[in-house]
Image 1 (cartoon, rainbow, N blue to C red):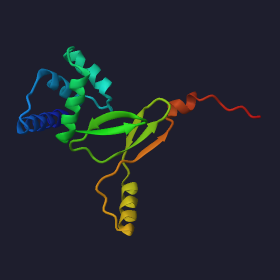
Image 2: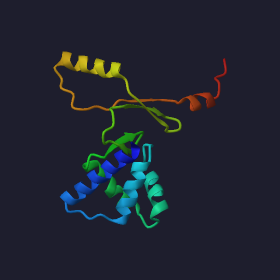
Image 3: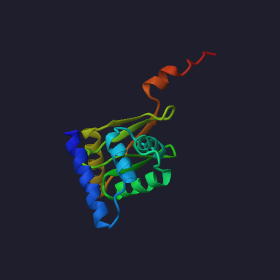
Image 4: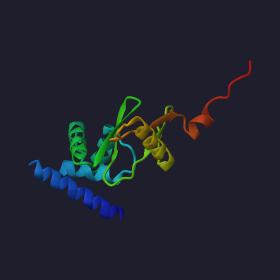
Length: 154
């Protein structure tokens, strides 16, 4: 199933490049493969490191430009989290929201039909048409909470 999805995403990217008369290159292919194989929310530097494992000559600018093409093709979405831009796969993904740890930067995805229902109800009451949203909740993850020194009474 994952291979079928990646194949479909590769085909979408190829079609996007062809439609816009953009060339395929080994560097773009390395970036695409690294992006599609990752299950994480990647920064440009994360993706650069992954792509360079396959093609050491890949540069940061090429990663940035390729990510913009992936976004335009509907394969990636950009998240700005605590001032840092991250990218995640978008194609055929169920809507989800994020818990973001302010201490270590870990990102946890979650979906809640109840939250979505409440949003829809409030929007309907306001006569508001939702075209999309991002729900980001900031705090500390379990590991960071357990590492926090205990407060002294005083």
